[in-house]
Length: 490
Image (cartoon, rainbow, N blue to C red; front, side, top):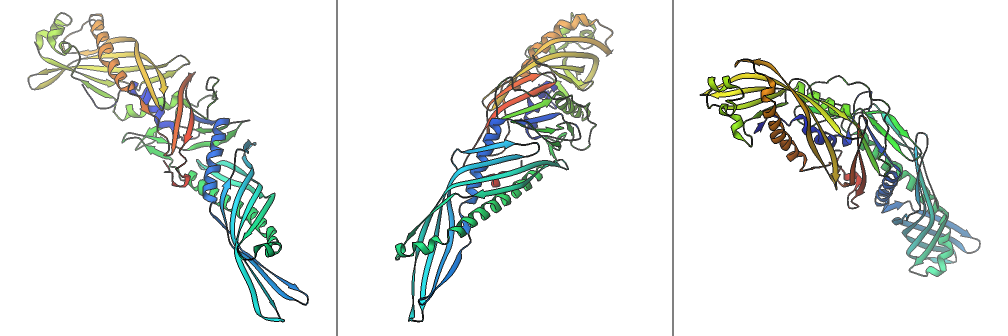
């Protein structure tokens, strides 16, 4: 059994996999909702990456000069000030506003190393007295907060840090080397400088990292070609919608020709997003128009074509097997082999309900007789099939099954005379149930791994269907060894 392209029902499983980063146009047909657990996960990932990007962090040095009456001058300096460790702990929260999100991390501790030097000179003593050593600083009670806006900018997501601040509660400076006990008082004079440096440099570096993340978001491709036939447009629609504990990103999500744009389908009604009561980090909702747009593109490209030359009961593809069903076929072409040339008469139509995913397929089946060296088309039968399937998930794979609901037949043209469809209805039913459905289920039953950005893994994916929507509900894990800056754009 050969096929030019996957049959339409195979898209019941394939298409959701490509939509996990989708978008286009001015109307939303796909929505991704990040719930409170997803926001908490994103916060922890970003904080972890911020800690890695901030350590080690070089802070500016400083020098102070003191003049003591009748004794002379004292110079003290601190240099090579390096913040090399941050411990954020679990005391961090993410809050949502009307158009922004706020991340606050409290109770942070940090460790800083530095070098210190001291020199004393006086007109009484022509020789300068100096000493030097190192110091360790324990930062306690640090709090860092950042307010970020995510906006739609020409179809991409733009991230802007509107505010970022840092406050330090306590510094404990411990000197090592030299007569450090003697100079502790002088070095403590640098406490305000170190505190101000930490409170200034950390927000600057966080804002710089936010700018890099903004560049990554705006660099996401607007369209991704799935093959040489269809492409997924990835333009975001409108600004994100902020709820009490969720952020929703609306995406058009329709498929278009890889070489030419197609018109959008009707606008989807207001989406009703729910994981059936479950609390998940990510909810991805796909409008049924997403599937239908892809089916339309493949149909217009002429890709929905299937040539059947092998079946379990091969006698069905020999005119002898039709001797008593269509006698004239056997009389004109005795004992000749046949092939079934199946193509779509119109784009298949999918319908999604809370119980199942249904599809209506209008196909033309041409009976070709292999007579000698010739291929002779002898009849064309219109076959309208109603089928339905379900989508399930296990681990990071989604699976599906599809079954025949009903079908109808009509004769479009014939070179072997008219014959009643009731004569062949039983044979066609056997063909649909023993060839078409098992073929589709063999592909759908293998499962398809949901694609994610490198470093991230979807966990416990489950599928929920409702009126005109298919939703994938999932948690997410992130490999700590990965770095956000190194993640591929797609």
